[in-house]
Image 1: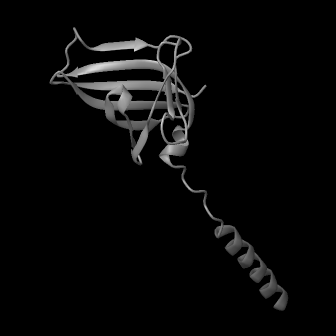
Image 2: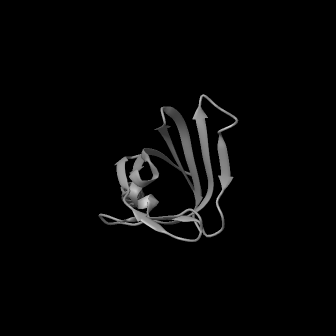
Image 3: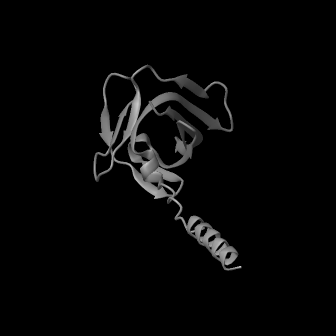
Length: 138
């Protein structure tokens, strides 16, 4: 009987230790964004839709966005593949960022397996547009 009690106690102790493992914290939006991303596609759709002005294009090879950790000039973008510009980016909340140099103060951020989509609603000349950048991790 003592042997059975000892064995059961041992298994309960092992089970209790295994179930008390701390789970890994979910990475913050900033942590997930940091690094270099390859720009793959840009889309601009007018609201309401206008086939004459709606636009979609693939970026040339070498185009990228890089999110760095720091204060000013911590965002580097090269949309043409031939010359980078620096700017500032800010985290708004768990799913939105601001990149003022791209005229979008509220990008919704969606992550895929190895992809990132930045979508914003902006107004240009009194007309609303949905602007969307699609990026992949190199």
